[in-house]
Length: 345
Image: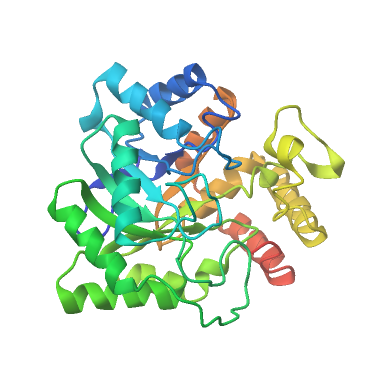
């Protein structure tokens, strides 16, 4: 396994990060334990979760993923062997969190972290991330920015409470998620001006179907040591090719929840996926592994967050770190991208 620094001086984390959002919905605890055990044996030391999970988000399963991870950490007694990341939910309208609408205020961030720590059976998280901004911005598939003069939790207040949590020993490092170039640079500038902790990572979507991170954020990631933690590197599994020609594999996410997760199933995304799958097959590659290997090769990447609902998927996804794509494959990928750029932002 390859390891990269989380931020300039942060811990070494595995190039492949184990995503967990299906645990408590599509996977039960026993299956999650099997995934965790295999991943740790394969050299993965980085686990990402969130108070929101399992997905799709709902009151009945909220927090279940963290509870499963906490039970595993307690059963295995190996907290010191993993770099554990979680997230606090941004403004959402989901009223089952903390008795009302979620906001990134001091009271809510502190309460969210304390609840996560209890579920995770730990005194601290290695990385605590703002899951998405408190303000309205262009994230979750929206490319264009539409300004709104709404009241937001000031970024200074958000960063100050995170600084207090670091000083209290509950958090080792802090990071962003679903953030914009303006937001990332604003947090970094505030940290430098006030002597507060810097954001060490930004967890945004990145895949062959969504390379919007390359516009603005890639330079921030490299120049500011705030590397990408890429989520949805397979576009909800679409890039594996399993949904081509109207296929509906049993138990797959889009088979179960396709009416909710429509981001990667429009006509342009289907056309791009078909072209990428053809490139993989023409070169004797597994389509999913090719898609993951491309993400792994990006210079602004810190870690690639993979997820799986069965062990065969997990093993194949982890093995992607061993694959180096040829110049010929890279050029073929770039040709498709030029013809059909970012079909599913």
